[in-house]
Amino acid sequence: MNKSVYKRVLLKLSGESLAEQDGDFGIDVGAIKNLANEVLDGKNLGVEIAIVIGGGNIFRGATASKLGMERVTGDYMGMLSTIINGLALQHALEDVGIQTRVQSAMEIPQVAEPYIRRRAIRHLEKGRVVIFAAGTGNPYFTTDTAASLRAIEIGADVIFKATKVDGIYSADPMIDDSAVKFDQLNYLEILKKGLKVMDSTSVSLCMDNKLPMIIFNIREKSSIKRVLMGEALGTRVGVDL
Image (cartoon, rainbow, N blue to C red):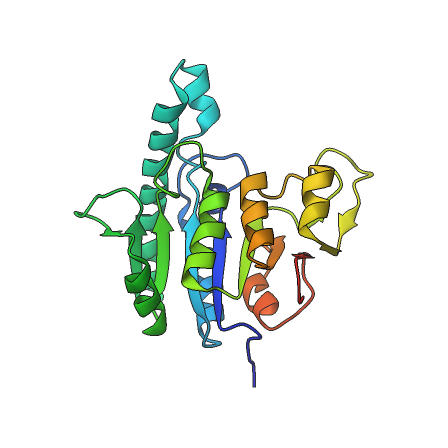
């Protein structure tokens, strides 16, 4: 019988995972349906799944800079983008039969619950997927940092960082053919090597709280289910892996 090695996980998704191709803007119906089915495969193993979603497919901080906006305004616009993505993902998940709740770090009661830790944990215990939107609710903090923070708060066993490549490399494998993939790393190695997997604040939070991470390609078939079952996909980071 299929069985997960984890009880509760935090899945970090970039906004780009909802788009048709890397670098595209907007939400692609096919991409978001595929994502919902991948999450459903994981739920069918009896795992409690929380999700932190980015907003890069709708608005990027670099866009704000080009428009001459101040950083704080751009960051709040990015947070609003994650709420849009969270609502779209909620619809896709419920379309495949998964009960879902969106909790936002910015108060927007017409469309999402406020983030309340104990309520989020209760939703997970009842078998619902909880989508955490609006990052931490503060400018200057990325959704990577939000993922680490929420994972620690809800007592997740591990962070799954779903990316467009199959792990952490010494350089960008899309650009550098000589890039070497790492099967396993510790937190300090990521920080010392300056590896661009998650921002330093996020990695430091995981290190201080001994929270492991697994980085893998979300577009690889059944990747979430396979990692949940202990298959050695991607790159594993941290202790007790």
